[in-house]
Each structure stands twice: as structure tokens, then as C-alpha cells.
Amino acid sequence: MNKILESFYFRMPLFMQNMGISVYGYFWKKHRLGGIFLPEVKAAREREFYTYEQWKGYQTKVLRKLLIHAFDSVPFYGERYRSLGIDRSFLANIKLEELKLLPYTTKEDFRKYGDSTMLSSKLLKGNFEHSSGSTGTPVHIYMPDYVAQTFSALMENRVRNWAGVDYRTPRGMVGGRRIIPDSHMEPPFYRYNFVEKQTYFSAYHISEQTIGDYLNGIIENKVEWMTGYAMSNYFIADFIRKTGLKAPQLTAVITSSEKLTEKMREVISAVFGCKVFDSYSGCEACGLISESAEGELLVSPDAGIMEFINEDGNEVSNGEVGEIVSTGLINFDQPLIRYRIGDMVRIAKDQSLKTKHQMTKIDEIIGRVEDVVVGVDGRKMVRFHGLFIGIKGLVQSQLVQLTYTDFEIKLIVEKLFYNKNEAEAIISQRLESQIGKVAVKFDYVSVLPAGKNGKVKAVISNVVK
Image (cartoon, rainbow, N blue to C red; front, side, top):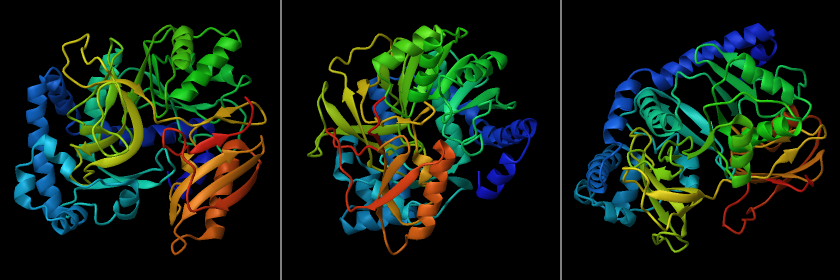
């Protein structure tokens, strides 16, 4: 939502806000679930029980097509490969085991060139979607309709259907969109998208005092499954449990964006009386890991070719932790080839599966850990990437909560493109609108400290929970 529309939306009465969200939902649904969506759902189902050899053949065929297209039509890759002596003939006949001979694409590459030389010269109509990523590095993802619809078809088949629901089932969503103005604390803390039967809950107002309203939204709108941020869904379930309220039984809760711990899974499952399913994809749509009905995390080979590497760039063995390097097989308009996402997983030591699927099994998705920010009023919040979207010259960011009302924001910037006064005003206003009146100190650094897993936390809180 751009600033003008957002300002207009926040001044609307409640019923008009619901109408506005529903109109937006209509176009969003058309973008994701129109066009080739249903044929792609059918195609994904037909591939679901491919053998390892069939998957190898499928990936090889699509990879060669993608690499030839990138060499011929995407300046970033064409120039890079030519400079390294990689010719068209090699790419046209590449084997999967030779993919490691190609250079990585980093988040810094994506940030710098994602809206210029990383775009295809044969660009199809689409829109840019914004993501800061888990390390606070902002990127612009080009999302044509065919990419959104093909990836949504995989999500339908390998995420929703595996959990026993589909795109038509009434759902509740807890996400990062700001549906309620400023630090508004009057219910309802959700809005309703009539077009998709979607109840959209605010991720920024969850507390013991407000939880009754969240539960009302689930009950009144006949929500059958919940999705969205893992931590926010856990907060909702935990506050329902602590306040002694009774939640209706759901079909499933499907979490994403953050690490789902066993404790979170147990609480959510107990409160809503259903299975909890984990998933991992990301806005870049270049890979998918999802949980089957049997509770196994599986890599979808038709979403992307996922490599799992150690610090030396070598492929890790089963049972070991590796960094995800993914080559997306869907988006030809903004290809991501050997893209270092920055997240870590542990590959299952035992690759035998409980089903007929022949896919790589993952034990644990490790690299999506952020601290929880706690407000003075007890609200618990996660996912502050929206603070940094659209800030020119911003390379990387980190939000640190020192006390309930004192924050430090560490930034790495390109001074040539960064407007200090403008950026600080925008970020401060966004933070205040999310959590209320706070004091903000900006710290400009050359590097952000990494944790034990080598990953930079986007959010750190020093407040004792």
C-alpha cells in the first residue's frame, strides 16, 4: 500500500476498511490464483511422486533452459559468465553436479542490481514486491503473474493440501501488513477480506488484554485454519491458554517466516486442537521446504535447486547443518542462480521417508531466529522489517531494544545514496506507529555482529521477558 492510499485507508470507518481490504484482496487473488494457477496445481500433483531420477531429469531440463535465458537475456549473468570464461555451450549442457562451478549470487548483488541488470530484457508484466530479508538487507523482488501463480500452485499442493486445507478454506492470517493506524489500541484488531474469506490479524497488538478480540475474530469469521508468523501464532495461542479462554478446534495451523520451536508447536496444537505445520519459502520464490501430513520437512525440487553448503562452500553431509544456496526454477524474469539466502538448515541423517515421496528430508530449519520486542503495555511483537522498506542507500539494519521505551537502530549505509535526516525521520515514525512513543538512537556501523550460527539477527531485545 503506498503512502497516499495508506493515509486514506486509515481515515476510513471500519466497514470501509474491510471493503478496501477486500478490493485489494480481489486483485491480489487474481495475481496469485488466476491465470495458470489451477493448471499448475494439477501439474504439481502429477510430479509429486516423481522418483529421484525423474526429479533429476526435470531439474536438469529446466536449469539448462534458465541458464541459457540468463546468459542471453539477463545482463548481470551474461556479463559475469563471459568474464569468467563460462560459455553458452557449457550452460546448455550443464549437469546438476556442475552447478557448483557457477558463482554465487549474494543479497548484496540482489540489492544493487535486482531492479536493473538482474532483470530480463524480455521482461513480462509484473510488479516489484519488497522484502528486507531476515538480515535486514532490503531487496526488490520482481513478481510477474506467472511466477506468483506457479509458486502459489506449489504452496497449494505442498503446503495447504498437505495440511488438509486449500485456498478456498476460510483462514486467519497474522502478518506484517499494517491494517490498524498508528499505535491504535481499540478493537477490533483484525480486518476481513470477503473475497478470500481471510481474517487478517494485526501482528502488533497481541497481548493478554487484547486476546479476547483476536479470539472473537476467529470465532465470528468461522476461521478454519491459521497461518503467518510462527511467533505471532504462538503468542495468540499462549495468551488464550493463560487467560483460560476456549478456542475452537481448527483444521491446521501453518507457520512461516520464523523458527518454529517444539514448545511453540506444542502450545499452538494444544490450544487449537490440531496439527501445526512448518514451512519455508521466502518472498524470492526460489525454493520451498514444507511439512507433510506425516510430519516430515521435505524440499520441493520443482521450486528450486537447493544446495546446502558449509563455510568452505562444500556440500554438507546428511545430519549436518548447511547454509541454503538456491537456484529458483520458476522466475525467468529475475533469475536467482546460486542465491545465498543466508538461512541454515540441518539435513536429516536418515533420508528414509514415511511416504512415497522422493525428496530431500530436512530435520530443522535453523536460521530464522529473531528476538521478541515487548511493549510497555505487554504487547509482544516480531518482524520489524517494514521499518526499512524503500530506504535508499540502506545496506543492512538491526533493531535493538534496550528498555521498554529505548531503542537503538544499527545501520550500514551507502553514504552517496543515503539521506540521513529523511531516513531517520521515516524509520522513527514507522517504529512509533508500530509500538508507540519511544526514544530512538541511530548508530552507523561498518559491520553488524553475527551470532554463533554466523547469521546476523535483525531484531535483538535486551528486555527481560
